[in-house]
Image 1: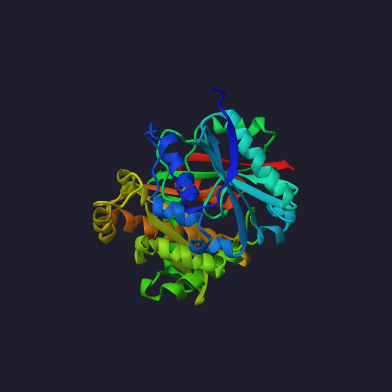
Image 2: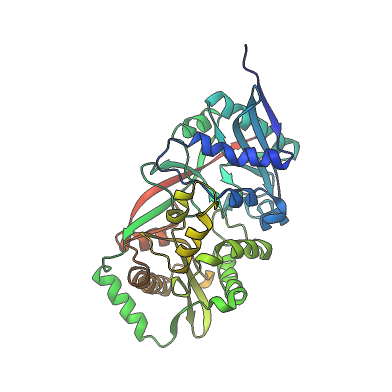
Length: 384
């Protein structure tokens, strides 16, 4: 019997479940893949549960062979991305694809061609990928760092995907990196001097966030982020619906002492968000909170003890970028959160990122505190 490969759009709840379930089979033998909670993965691709869809649209596809799901991909268009300066990576005519997995190269290429076809039909002239689905979720293809699990909100992929994407005519447009460091060790003397100098400066205040004022604090951070990232590659503004949904998901792992806001003369000018690595807690659950996973996770959330803390986002207002003050505030926030991470949560390892390959300021800060690149993610482009 000849195998018949078909590519079809996801249309039903059953299709979405099949879309989410596929990686559980494809990565079953990968010791470093972290199974996501199925409910969270379904929420990401359900418009009613993901604020990103308030300014974007997507079409998911499944590949089937003799009725068996053997691959998946998402093609999507972010209307905000269409409005930004092309020099920042997106702009008019740029669509994206992501959430791709396949058993074989021919299946992968057929899925990619189908995603490109959908993007062309929507008027797109260039494709970026993989971006799954928002740039703020899991952008890029893992190309270095397969030998250890990803932290919360970072992706993990099969090594062969890189060759498959490049065979399809895609070229590298941007690299995203994460840095790891031993946070049980104090920082070099020069960093300690910079921190001590900042502590003597009456203009500077580094404060913890107040989780009881979650929406107010989130608005402050959003303002700094959208201002500070407005000229960065991929700087698509985050919107209130996205912040609301992300807040619901992340609020359980938000702790006052792990998120800091820096004020200069009373004005909020920088922030640093640190999250306990939730992947350490959910990895043993194999995607399900039943029958007892919810209880285990709840106990962990009350007083998390983790090996790794992840810094997914840092930001400083545009008018301070490239200044000595920006670096000083960054070092101060990093040090205060480092102390809390070790003393209160038992952490020994930190991960910073992702960091753009051309973000020399952030890369310099990471290298000065003796961190090293541990994972690299590629984003590719192709003219349609």
